Length: 230
Length: 230
DNA sequence: TGATATCGTCACCATATCGTCACACAAAGC
DNA sequence: GCTTTGTGTGACGATATGGTGACGATATCA
Image (cartoon, rainbow over all chains, first blue to last red; front, side, top):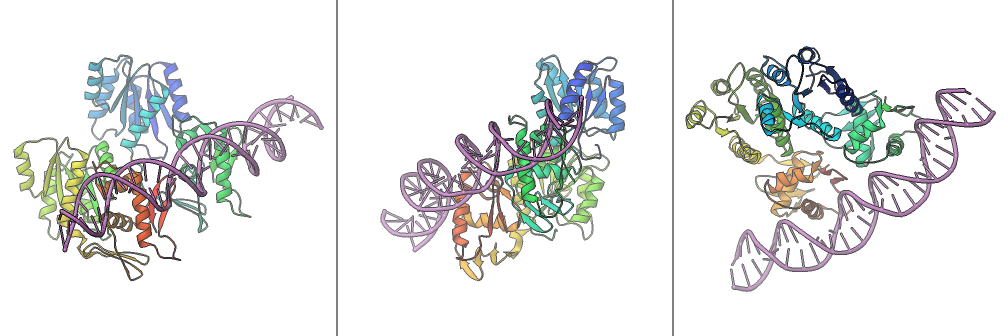
């Protein structure tokens, strides 16, 4: 399992277009992405990068996806990663075979990107349960996920649910520049449609809420990119 | 046995997914959770954290569950914890063997989460008899689980059974924000079909019961999340 | 049995919070 | 300088959320 906070997703597919598509969408949703185009490279990257989730194409040159899956799962001291098999065939028998081989989930082409992302997230939650109760601190900002209490320099701050989740996201990855899309995804949820400008407004509200006269604004606007904290 | 009021459950399982699932459900029911993925780590955590209940997978790498069980029970000055063996096999012989080794209870996969939680609670009651007179105090609120007496600033307060359990939950984890679902689970019990709004109503009744003119309301409403005490 | 306490649900209200827009302002490009 | 593009923000209507009194159904107890 990867050591940094950002989950790593390994995409194993021999189709460059598929890799690009998935890579783009996963990164847009805030994941780190590693790529492999065949089974051997996949096994190598798994050993090297310790991904959290593996998107594994069923049909691969040289070593088949199902074989890769077996090897990962039977490997001693092997990967803890969740494996999601991606297949063109929707045969029930294939599905069963995939899951029997040790895959954690199974998705058939054609799939919606939304659905795929949802599956990735769901599996990620299983593999890497969020360690609750971890109090977040950035500068003089404090946020306690368990009690939902927020303070700046000891001063209690009231936030609405959305601003609270927004600040949580920003604080969980201090310094990371979030795109508006990634924030929408993380704070609002995947299938909700809202304008990206909504993020601006909530950032504004958050700024006002945590603002202290004289103190510098801890939220950084990165023109053309998004926002970051600290 | 752990020192704080909230019971600690140690989950020993090499399957990350299992650990995550149990961890999630146990925490949702108000328990604290410790995790171990093999026997050695389990023994370590038992010595360190003194859990009240141990959920022990039968099949473990390195040191088997049954061996862990034996070691815990034969250890001098060892843990008082209740051990619940979790096994894939439903063999009667295994059951007997498990119990002979010193396990307090035995449950076979697949199990319903409800059943498991019930077993945990049942064993907890044996290990930790009704929290033996542990009087809960938050601010000027007092609640005695043994005598079922509640008072505020010395003034006796009468509560119905539901309000009593509700206040108990809130007081056991001062500051923690309980979702309505978690409260339903904890106070009403699983599988009871009750609208989440019912929680609101009972919170209202509880507020009225423990309210004192002039004093601030000790129950905090966290919009979009739930309720917390203090 | 009747009296009482407690419960769960609903309807209605107040308002906290939300998403969008419009316009002002700032930064980057030329 | 001017233009273009991106961001800040006050206002506003729509909506979601929570508080609460009323009411009928049950459970409890003498």
